[in-house]
Amino acid sequence: MRSFLKFFLASFVALIVFSVISFFFMLMLLARLGAGAREKVVVGPNAVVVVDLSQQFHELRKDDPFLNLIAGGAGNAPGLFDAVRIIREAATDGNVKGIYIKADGNGNGYAASEELRRALVAFRKSGKFVYAYADGLSQNAFYVASAAGKIYVHPKGAVDFTGFSLTTAYIKGLLEKLEIEPQIFYNGKFKSATEPLREYKMSDANRVQTTSFLNELYGDFLVHISEARNIDTATLHRYANEAQILEPSDAERLKLIDGLRYDDQVMDEIKRSLSIGGDESVNFISLNKYAVANRLYESYSGNIALIYAQGDIRSGSDIDDAIAGDDYVKMIRDARQDKSIRAIVFRVNSPGGSALASESIWRELTLARKSKPVIVSMGDYAASGGYYISCMADSIFAEHNTLTGSIGVFAILPNMKGFFNSKLGITFDGVKTGEYADAGSTIRPLTEKEKMFIQRGVDSIYATFKQRVVDGRKLSAAVVDSISQGRVWTGSQAKQLGLVDRLGGVQDAIDCAARMANIPEVELVTYPRPKGTMEKLVKLFGQEMRASFMKEELGEDYRFFETIKKVRAMQGEAQARLPYEMVID
Image (cartoon, rainbow, N blue to C red; front, side):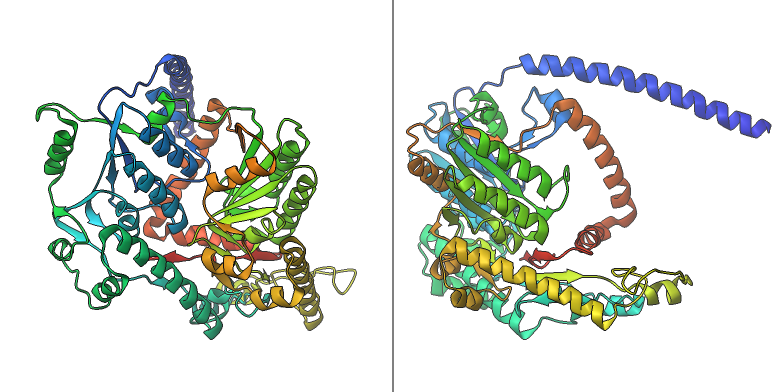
């Protein structure tokens, strides 16, 4: 009893101390928030804007409330289109003399990288310098860095130039060992999203489509490098195939980069370009600080709604890093009913997800199109459900290397009976009032009739999906059927097939919307609207705590935990989705 009282009192005192500390910490945060709001970020003369490619540019800018409190509002990570506009604005800013690309890795997909690269190429045309530097230069970082006037690599660093590969983990054998039967239903011979659960290796159909789009992506990569470095694509292809670039000196000798430099040597060269002394510091300014200094972020009212839709498409609301069906229906409806908004640009970067949520979003966009132009801009992905919510638009823009199409449907219902019985020693028993009262249960296998019912539902959703494409793209049913089957296409291929209208980025889509709505001066209003700082702090704290515990326990296996979460989210609902893991190296 005495030990219990000691433990109780110690815990009680600790709770009080924690509460008091938390109270004063929140007061400090609020005070800092007020002070930070009054601080002004200034660009200053001889500025060099830093583009750090290791940073992932999401579609919608990411706010870090903790950094915001410390940095006076400059703790946000700009969105992709924000970054493009910042680079464009910097080209005309007399204070900005150049751009420094930190090319140690690239956290962005190839379509996002294409938008960044295009902006950097345009910046160079202003006559200002662009330097790129890396300790280790990966291929997707090289793709963007090739827009620079000078590319330097650490003398003892690395340059990867070996070609593209795509690897998928197949877990059928694991499921068999665990005695878990996935019970998969799909329509579309190229629909490869479920292959890791039902095959030991890539199917022939999937190999055909993957080879096709991977070669397209690689061809686009070689063309851009060829134009930047003045080396023909056949020669570049030979360099990769023959592994001629093993050391950074090989890349320098073959003119893929401009030289081998240490960081201080690159800094000295930038100083010479700025005509400043060796002891002076370079006025480097991050993309976000530049945006804050120039008030480049959107207002809360405008004549064109730019709606960002990034992540898996999920049913429900208030789901982080996902396209929550209920939330997006409301967002689109608000934009549709707002008479001051004369056009909608719907930016889609999604591998798909819930077929039901996709249909709901499609419906609301279709209603919006009756009263104002709806233009879709595709990011890295706009596939399966991502294409479902795009196909009704007045005009669709994609990048050359966007992955789109994948018009197909699947459903998964795992049978966990063997796992529970054999692995855990758990058995189940019960009663029911009808033959199908427990249909959809994961503790027993489906009957043949139940399998037939589910397959019929999948087939029905697939037929509806194809009809949406027929109606939206004004293609014949036969043509849509021939290019569907779950097959993935690049943006270039999709344009040839009629699945998209034009190749271009977000700005091209906005320009199109302005023309269609006859808007002489564009004012953007962005959705989703940002949350308040305190709301973000509370939510972020809880999320970070949970994530940090899981990452600490799982280490590198945390990514498999994330994959399992995605598979669980697919359970019991028809999915229009790409393969759940697609990493191109």
